[in-house]
Length: 157
View 1 (spheres, rainbow, N blue to C red):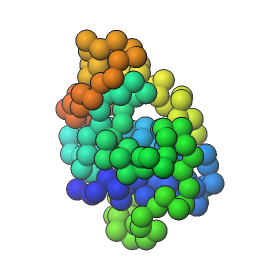
View 2 (view 1 turned 180 degrees about the vertical axis):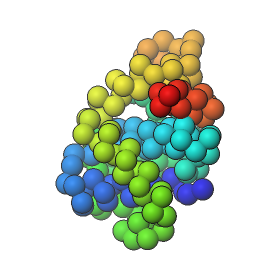
View 3 (view 1 turned 90 degrees about the vertical axis):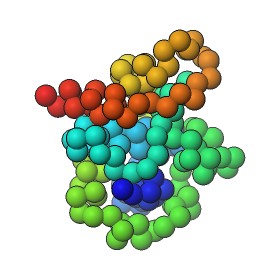
View 4 (view 1 turned 45 degrees about the horizontal axis):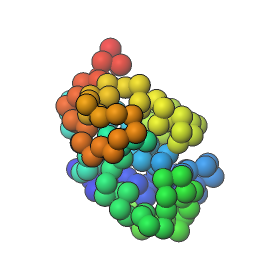
């Protein structure tokens, strides 16, 4: 299992260096979420990286990555290459891991952070984790990885 920071660095490098695509902090959070969700779905519940997501008002957020960029980056701040810790991270990922991440990015990276947030708000894992919370109430409940994997596995079938 990889460290979430490695996957984070890879996504920033891929989108900012290789593609020169807009990448806000909130979009990065959602891309990490979907990379993990699809890995759980396609690899029988096996996570790609350590780290879980909390059901925040603005959708799924990994606290470790949030803390990494806070206070210099707000959720809507643009990410840059200077935010990368390891520019050689792609050499530490397997071809299979890179292919998985790239496949998810092909599907989700064209969307804005706000669009990805709206998508996650319509999906069972986030909705279930926020049960009992009002729409604008702070919530740090972790999204259950079993629910996450099962939900996305059903989307494949």
